[in-house]
Length: 289
Ligand code: ELE
Image 1 (cartoon, protein in one colour):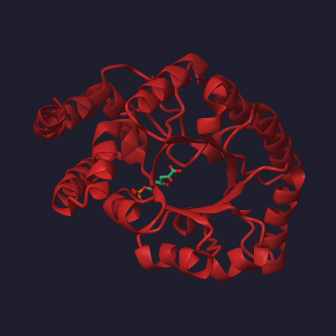
Image 2: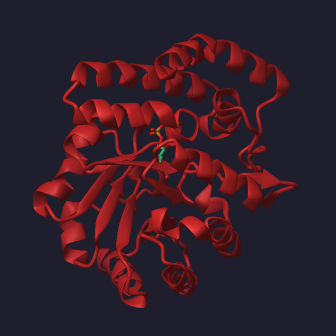
């Protein structure tokens, strides 16, 4: 069994986390067959949320806690531990954390210690969130082995072989890749995908999972090329901002705007974005009806 995991967008209203909109968005994704929600990931602007706001996202999804992987990464270990304990009390499936970013010259053994301390803080599965492009740190398969206590890895990496290394070293680890361009590969060779496109086209990801399961690789690869086109368009506008509009365009409800320094799209950009994705939207409607 492979998992479709969505790094969920964090809705804001007047600059504050909109818990109601988050809950409704998550409910829609789960109803459409998404397996797990990854809270406070990059797409959810996790690094830009205060610890109390991270907790608010978890509270919004407390009824679905067993379907949540809760990202608790902080530059203050005590805060990360506090979040981990709350997550345990609410019964999440797992917590996750990116490594200590910003402090580029910290010794490797301290990177290792951070994760061991997190594992020890709350008896629940801990995932590494590895995103070297964003954090400047690559906690690779060798380091994961040294850490020793991790249950899984989400590797946001365009190199599939980098992600596969975790699995090769320790087949018991649950290993996901977080690149939208590797959804097909992740559903075929790994334990699943964590794909930001799942926020606006969850149906496509669930369909890909089912096609791979049925050995219809050709069908799944065709859908991958649709995702590639969508990501290419979104990137032109800045994916973090465009994602909010794409949820409205494809799913038909608003989750508000991002929060600066992730600035919302301008009205004129929204219009051209809509026009650019129109034919893909029609194609998806046809596929799913
Ligand atoms: C990825 C980004 C990667 C998803 C998260 C994720 O948001 O936590 O453009 O595919 O490299 O970090 O969506 O973006 P691409 O795991």
